[in-house]
Length: 312
Image 1: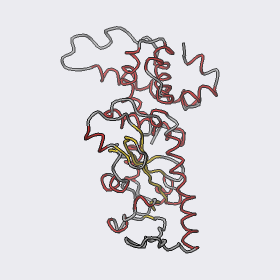
Image 2: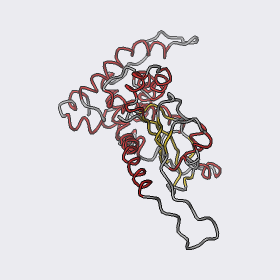
Image 3: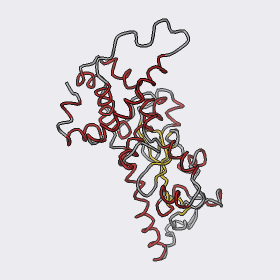
Image 4: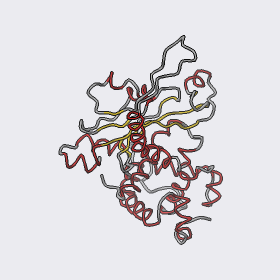
């Protein structure tokens, strides 16, 4: 049976299974524990309640081990049956316990919504540069596979021509340090990156320069006041001109694209880091109504590791 006492004696294995170092987990647990009693009282209080708060069978695992189970489930995305075997719980109690903790974990962690609200309140140049070094931000979309939908209409709307499978898509905005400052709600996989931007995009200070890829071509026409930079694209010769190659970019344009790609790699690294939590990297097996809070928590865990703090 897995528990904190056993696993914390093996730091490298602990990090592989949870995504956090032992001291980081201790800080995470301390923040959760400080708000747990108030959260449980609020969760269990309701007008038509017949029994006092605290009545009923107590949890089999202490809070520390339930948080450990929570992180292992998110990191490895194993089945609830295997999770139950590892923690000596009934299969039905695994996801029940995780669902009860999710709102509290999202409340404690520095999820993108909290950082975006802070970014919108920034006023001085010093505050802005502290959150966005060199006044830069990077935006990119990422997809995750879902099981083949049963409904024909949903199969069509969620089919991604790029991934050749059924997916959902989210858009992340990160600063040069890899801190996720904005995440959109998930959308169907067939939606174009730019269409997703027009539907939901971050509102950052005007002097922040957004670095984009060619998936957002045309953004300067629709948003002329947006401070952004795009790579150069070779011009298509047009229809009916078979065998005619597109005009090559100049050496200066190629050098510009190369430098932009070097800077934008932080967004690709962030996409890779969130997908190390297999709940975001593997095929998503849970109900899609839970998708946004689960991916918010993954972003919050990554932000906690990048910033080293849970306070915003």
